[in-house]
Image 1 (tube, rainbow, N blue to C red):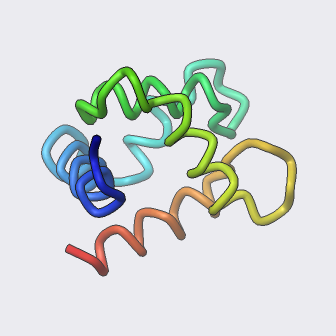
Image 2 (image 1 turned 180 degrees about the horizontal axis):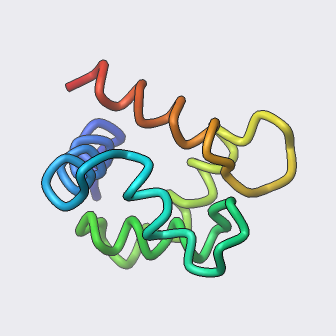
Length: 91
């Protein structure tokens, strides 16, 4: 099983190597264009980051739990930006 740091490193690597900015990554994974990332969209991000299929749903739930500051059960751009900044600080 991946550790938290391994997961964050994989997300960082995905964003840094496949997108010109975190905002581009956010917009790419916001498939329905509603300016939020729901659990299924986060699971797709985790899949692209090569997080094991076995734990993707759990990790997506934990990411929402940890970064959804307004309690709407989705990740807004501001919340995503905060998460990415924390990931970048660790790397």
